Length: 346
Image (cartoon, rainbow, N blue to C red; front, side):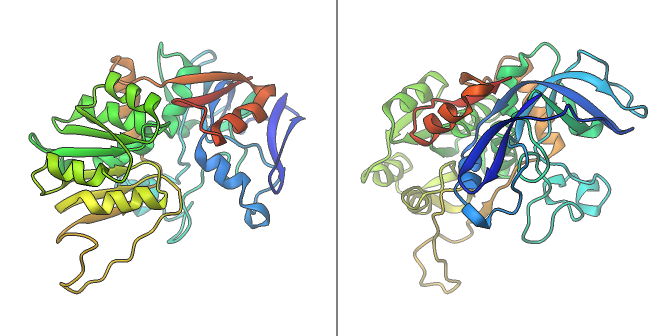
């Protein structure tokens, strides 16, 4: 089979490798599609700092069950499945409490839990071996279009679920960045809350997409964006702000418009930051703001995402590429030419 490997710093390569065997509790998945994420670009550009060279990349995968191990029940050949982005142990205290994206065994205080393509072999291949408990059936959903739901759907769902106390009727939610993550986050907010949704982006095409997806207000991300958002809220600020980009200008915007007791969720990995002091004289954030740097999501988040997609309330804007054209897909993503999500198809 063919697989896209990170073979060295800044270097991807399509290789012929054996089809992997399955263990008793594992499933061989025939990959239908593998989504590309800015996290993949981040890993590619880490250079010598990245510790896992030689492995197959791709943490957004879906496909069909090809073969099951002897101990696997509930899955049969041909079932369409979505592969979880978080491979938690399922047994530690965090997992038992439903916080599998904070797994104590397959992660640590400063290390995210095991994620396919970011250590174990990922989905940019013709086949992939997965523990049966890391798979969810998706019914009649197209697994090519569903593949990005593993991260681009689950990650916004988790961030939004963590802020639901602020997403009450009459509230205002700001979505910064209507890209791969943001366009799904916007749809989740529209489908599951009564909040007024303000979408912000630098790209006119993405703002047009935000309008189509139901944003109540769309704003160009420029020097006037913060003032306009504050004007919309009578100077009070937005109850929840979701930054799906994370570069310095978007972090600055997010901190400038969040309301007192608001929820601030940083999801994008753009490297932006802010300094916060605990004394009452600080003006970086209002009182009581809850800040979270969100990573991935839980099994419950994934089941919610699949359900919304099956109901027709959540869909991914997909640009499809043959697996052999992986480099073109990566180049298009880096150049900002992707609206929604790029998906590699074996």
